[in-house]
Amino acid sequence: MNIVIIGNSAAGIGALEAFRKWDRESSVTIVSDETASLYSRCLLSYYLADDIARSRLTFRARDFHKRLNAKVILGHRVESVDPSKQLVICDNGSRLGYDRLLIATGGSAKLPPNIPIDVGGIYVLRTLADAEVIRKHIRPGGKAVVLGGGLVGMKAAFALRKRGMEVTVVVRSPFVLSQMIDAGAARIVMAKLKEYGILVLTGADVVGVESTKGYISAVKIERVDSKESRIDDQSQPCDLMIVAKGVKPNMDLVSRATVQCNRGIVTNSKMRTSVENIYAAGDVAETYDIATGQRSVNALWTCAMQQGRIAGTNMAGKDKEYDGSVGMNSINFPGVDLISFGVVRPKQDEGYEVCVDERGGDRIYKKVVLKDGKIKGLVLVNKIDNAGVLLSLLGRKVDVTEFKTELLRDDFTYGRVLGSCAAAEYLRYVKASQSTEG
Amino acid sequence: MREVFCRIDRCLACRSCEIACAIVHSQSGELVKALREEPLPNHRVTVLKVDDNGRKVRMRSVALQCRQCLEPACVDACFAGGVVKDEITGLVRFDRDRCVGCWSCTMVCTFGAIVRVRDAKVAVKCDRCEDREQPACVAACPTAALVFCEPEEFEALLASTDIAILRESN
Image 1 (cartoon, rainbow over the protein chains, first blue to last red):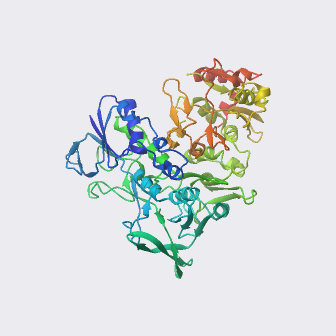
Image 2: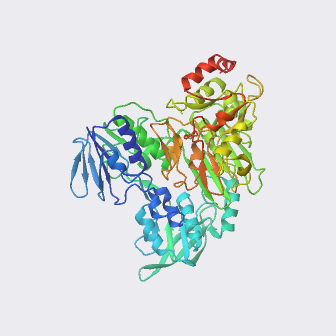
Image 3: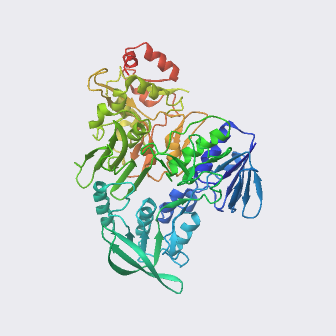
């Protein structure tokens, strides 16, 4: 059998590992448009901050592909897929036939139309090449603007601040990390950002860029009120701007007429697309979201790895189900350890129940979101040790009615789950190292 | 593969396991010296209350450590490649040198068995005392609540004890 995997990051690597568990014989080819191999995207901000050396960016051993007997084609983009002939066509015209194909092409940074990305000093942070060029432009005392306050934007902001730059984060929403926290957690986060010397402009957007000799010199920042009407403009000097407005799936290689696409490439619970023998996983794939019950693209490392493993197992002829993804994030910076997942800011009158513990004042914040007796979302600030226990209860859709008032207590641990769901849970505990449910 | 299991009918929450674990993971390996070490050594087994509001099992406790899961969520979550499942020994191994302290493993561990060493920004967990004949927690347990055996053996043990009460519930 000929296996082709497009993409050499979490989903592609997870798929290769899982596939080889079952099939040592088939030929496997991995194609990636990047020349750097086996580096971890999530570590790039640590590299920017000088927290780690470049050599530590790799997340698998150097001989990884060789050991797993996979051929690697680097620096070539797959232009298109021809499902009728079972071929992928690369940018150099070469064709690869496949019996089973995995599309793990990931995503690309979104670019707002008014940002001239070809102007020097304006970058996105997605690839190692991006990180290298940003590193060249970091100057202690220089002025940096980060457009977007999501996970990537905030990690970039901390890295640049740590390297001695003056950092301004520009966000449209009333606080940063608005996809993963609520106003209560934001109070702590925003205060700590200020302490760390990062300026956050909320309700604001970069609407223009000034440049001299092809290099950025200032940004024009527009502030808007809650109804999105303009309050004022101001110009601010800027030596380096990072655009972090989220990612979009790289799905141009498939024709929407043949492969069903929505927000991402639509997959079923086997990680298969609408077309026979074509699978998709990672940031390009749309999956069922366990927390929201909707279909969505959860472009996250953990989800990509899990989806890759499911895809790889099924491509090897096994039958493995994916329960679905959950939006989940862990971020930490001086004074804040934060974990959140699932539905964080539920809409009113949709039957959600919210419990909040703010007794920790300006340091600790906990919130759990429930519906029909089941956990749907969580935010934990600075008391995060049992986050995984709660995530597991969400993922397994366990009815927590009996102990829902205890979920946010500091002494809530796995022991409480064991006590309440005794027999079944004790068996899970005993069998974790044996069964695939672990 | 032998693993460490806890009989919740026997655990007295005396925390001998926690102390023994901290000692074997200290620099000196001795209690008195370990108490003076900076940073203080961490224990990777933790005694937890098994509380069901007194309905079935009453107040009991369990000494819990990493379950060395067959499909560990922490392996998938670690974007630094610092967690590896050793297919031969069954151990889930944490590589201290790769850890960047992002706590993604904490985010996904079903059992809450990850220990965060916050000053060092590094995550640690039970290594099942790989180099010892018997894990230190098991050797230290005064009531033989902690046992080191095959999962099937432990299941058989459960069936023959009053933990069987757990099997009737739920």
